[in-house]
Image (cartoon, rainbow, N blue to C red; front, top):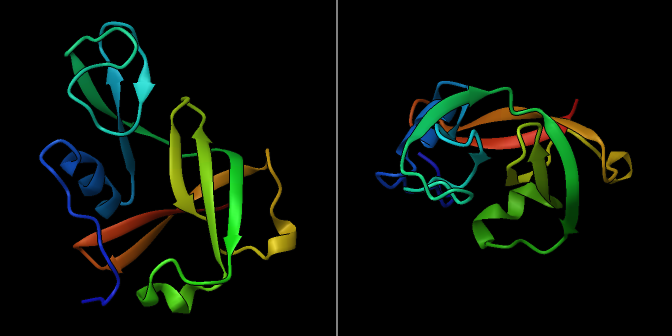
Amino acid sequence: MTDKPVPVPTERSKPFWDSLKAHRIDIQQCDDCGHWFYYPRLHCPRCMSASLSWKTVSGDGELLTYTITHIPTLPELADEMPQKLAVVRLDEGPHLNTTLVGMEEGEISIGMRVTPVFDDLVPGEVTLLRYTRA
């Protein structure tokens, strides 16, 4: 177990969190207009269709923005300092909030290509999606 805060999947978000445990990334796509989106929803944010499917994506994308925190956002995260909080645009279009790993501050640049890292926080139970340079 971990003393860190962990996501609590809802009925709507469970397929996403389950896919991470299997070391893949599933996000929703509208069956009617083809729009990809994240976070999980009941209706397409573009056309309002309720006809949605979960599909696997590579998770590769582009770093849109980031910030470096030197003060823990929570006491339980003190061992992760400095945190590299980021927003990644997946190649399919959706934006994900994440944490960058495996890079020093000077190696990070807006627009760089990034690839997913599956962080098994609690193996078999909780996997977080983090990113590193491609």
